[in-house]
Length: 309
Image (cartoon, rainbow, N blue to C red; front, side, top):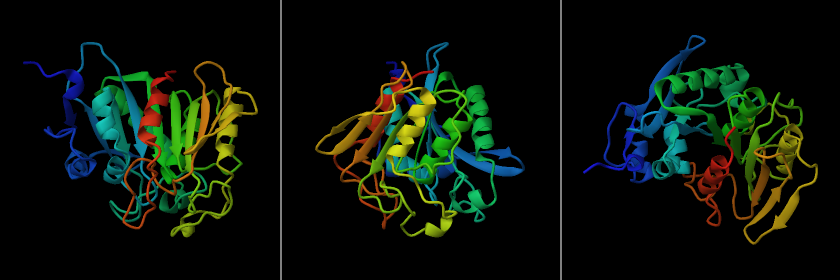
């Protein structure tokens, strides 16, 4: 009996029987699934979860999930549940890893004003992701019109940067508990964008201001703009109306701009979410409790599905 293709998943280089298992179990396989590539003389790592087989000529969406500052691929996979989502929806998900002065730990992304080693050393993370996409298109049946980026915190800021600097490669981005700083340049072309922030977040405060939390020294001191400024930035970039429709719902404050077809901009302020992936797992034992009123991964994937290039 033939196994349906969308149910037959593999961990790159490692065949497993438990893709539908818990994210924690998947995370234990990350060390064996991790792959490396050289970029500007530095060995960089990433993990790919992809279907074992596709129909001849079939191309699949690709979602990049960027971990937060201090995190890694295993942390991002467990926190978001994107691997299980990819298994159900038949797309490819990749978990790139940032860099650090400590091998394999305390990884960060150079998102401009944040964070840590990558910011301080001006690591070329945009170039890394551009090269990784070239490799993914070569090694996997990726649809170049359906490439997406999401991430949390420092990873969210990096998703913003990828949208700005590689707009020709990304159909949509979805930063989670991220921010802009007010000095970003508009991209050369539009990119659909959905932002999710927590109204209980003290690390990246949704009202704007100085970053809080345990790792304030990882930033360069530039205060973040209010969360809705992210949406206003992408509304300008995409030629949308300057004033959004706003709905104050029981669990979220939802804002949507009127935009050209396929270039939507939305912002979700989650009332019971702190610095966490809503509906996911806490990033650490000391991390904020994620929202129980919104499944962030579901919201993001539905947005991505609706926005090819």
